[in-house]
Structure formats: C-alpha cells, structure tokens
Length: 138
Image (cartoon, rainbow, N blue to C red; front, side, top):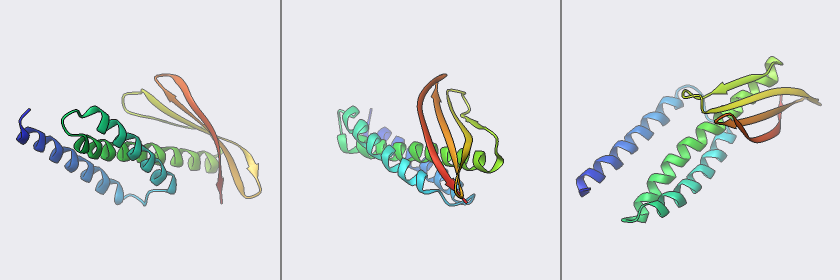
C-alpha cells in the first residue's frame, strides 16, 4: 500500500473516533468505569497494534491504542449504565450490541446499607465470559 493510502486510512480512523467521542459528549459525562475500561483498552490495543504492524510498530500502536480506548470505554460505560438501571428499577436489565454477539445482563440482588448489590454477567457469542458484583450507592 502506498504511503498516501496509509495516511488516508489513519485520518479516516481519527475522524471516526473524533465523531464518536463528540457524539457521546453531549449526552452525559462518562463514568469512572468508562475511563478505567478505556485505559485498559488503550493499553491492550497499543500492544496488539504494535505487534501486528510489521512496517511501522509506532503507527500500529497508536491506531490500536485509539481503537482500544474507544471500545473499552464504550463497554465500561454500557456496563455502568446497566448496573445503575438494574439497581434503581429493581428489575434485570439486558444490553445487547447490534449484531447480537455481546450482551451485558445486570440484576439487582440485594442491598447493603444505602447501596444496591448488582450482579453483572458478560456474554460473548452466547458464552458467559465474566461475572462480577458491584455496589451502586444512592
């Protein structure tokens, strides 16, 4: 691939990430969970991108970090919203991505003081990949 083609792809990815970030900024501020998940996603994406780009590991690392941060932050924010909604509605909440390959199920299982205990289950392709409990406090 010529250098101009690579530059175009990098610019297109950066523009897409900028649009995604500004589109979410007007809704509400991201939660701490979204920032933490975004940071983990950025780290994993940077390492994976650097290893996968044979021609320029810096470019791969930067692109991987950006995409990882975006995806990690989105997953963290969805998880946080599901937990809060389950805590306050007293009903199980399910979020599924558009293709239906990933799902988050949050269920309020009790209280401890002024905090709700929410159990979260994360599924990929119908398989349970992670299960956590968190407190959502008033």
